[in-house]
Length: 243
Picture 1 (cartoon, rainbow, N blue to C red):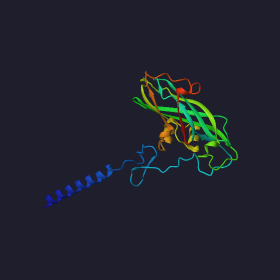
Picture 2: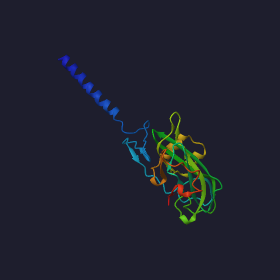
Picture 3: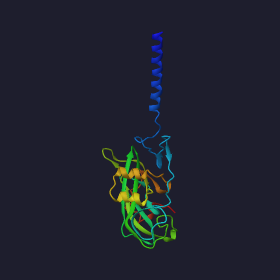
Picture 4: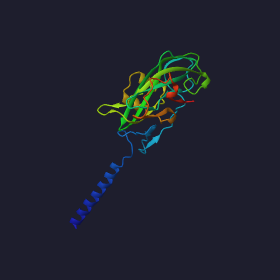
């Protein structure tokens, strides 16, 4: 009888241990140590699942904006042109016409490009901004979707690539080039020298807008990329973004 009781207790403990083990393993799809990897997602602390965030992407800062300010402003709306068929290793020229309100004085521009590749597929981000843009007597929606007729354009000759990996060489394959949505605060971190990894993390806070993405092919059968998109605009594909 004692032997039987001991055996029963051992079996019960083993089963209990198995149940506890299951609870430990079933920790959900995300946690503090395993953040969500999807664009515009965050981990729900209760369900441990990745949930899309309700993010405001209709402006780069809350409205109403101050009438007078000095801020670093990101590219939010405008026209972007680049060739979409280039040869491997070619730098891809990008011409950005950045819309800022006529109340804003923007005397300079900066851009940062970065890319990463997995096999023959690459992902590039082009971050364009105007440091120390000064607004005087601006409307409440100066950081948002004010009428297109109130745009003045900052012309930014920029580029991405060529897509080359050390130890592999020039990539023959495809790439996406994104001009990501960023807020005024986000782009200030870029201007202040945030790392490439930190920039990717900032970009991935927001869902990807297909209208802000160009698809590039790199192939030896493609024409060489032009030096720019201004001398012969027919060599580049253009998009109006944000309107």
